[in-house]
Image (cartoon, rainbow over all chains, first blue to last red; front, side, top):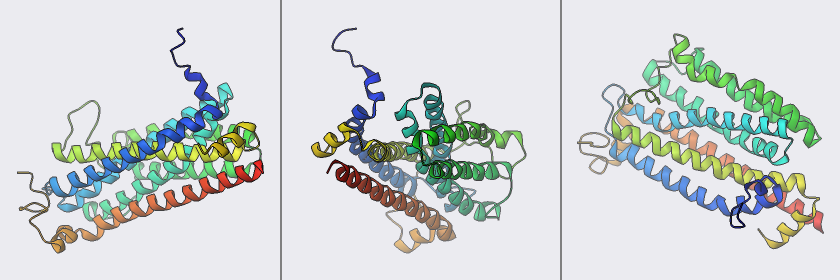
Length: 249
Length: 62
């Protein structure tokens, strides 16, 4: 180990992570806004009308990235819950706590936009098929996680109880993802997957992927902002918080 | 030729045509509207939470 190498474990402490997160947030926020603007331009000005779905398909540019994010954030949240349970680290539990509301927002968006796309395309706003039902369960898992945290006053006990809930709920994510293969669902199969060529025009795919990047950067900016608030809420009695608040970092 | 909404591209079409979204305007704009609303609500509530947390931390320090 040379003296120039960075000790990454240093950032596992809330005291050193707090200013780092503060410096990173504006960059992720700018990246999110830029990607969203480019994606909207690609999606509305460049992408042509779909031959089968007409203009209704433009909902897909937000629906698919939101649905991806809703599942991905849950997996990341469950990962931090596992870290907090096994290593008993405060920051990991705080990260999980910071991700849940943003995950719930993306699940909400995925459900609503899916419904508004389903009506003109399939003729119904909602069906109790496996994909939609499991995505709705995901929303309830986020709500359950947040409600359980809220119900327990002692933060460390809330960390452990909600981590167990989040980890049990993670089985739902592969169910959502593979539901269109395992069951005969109204929801169509994946148009984009890692194993096959995308089944859509390049410019439509580009609009969707750039919007997915916007969703990523947005989630990171939101999670970092929220984790800073959580750190202040939970560690405000410590000496370093007093120092950080006065220094305005 | 990648013509945007309709044949002439988004720039060549009228605002009314653009908003109509080929008859799917209600669905498309509701979807984008709900998304924007959800994001605005999340931003506002997070901002309130961050400010309250900072205020509490300052008060604690006296």
